[in-house]
Length: 103
Image 1 (tube, rainbow, N blue to C red):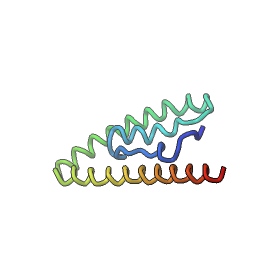
Image 2: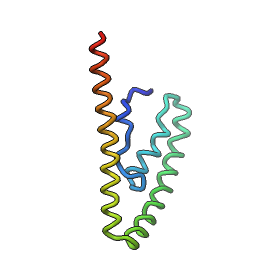
Image 3: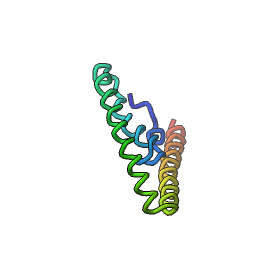
């Protein structure tokens, strides 16, 4: 089941965003066992619904309290997550090159 590269597993979207929270929660459904998957999908959907309610409230509070500074902070954090993904991709390329050298 673990056919993804580490860089493909990185979620770039913010944890407290709709997409980011859904992507992180949906990871629990990645299993080969069909019976377990049928149990985890409704659980994941319920967790995503709850997370989205929290995200709406959180956005409202943060934008009211901090306004544009909150937006700038989110941009900085997204850049950090993108750099993490780029570092992982770079390591994957280097390890592939090393493996081909030893063949």
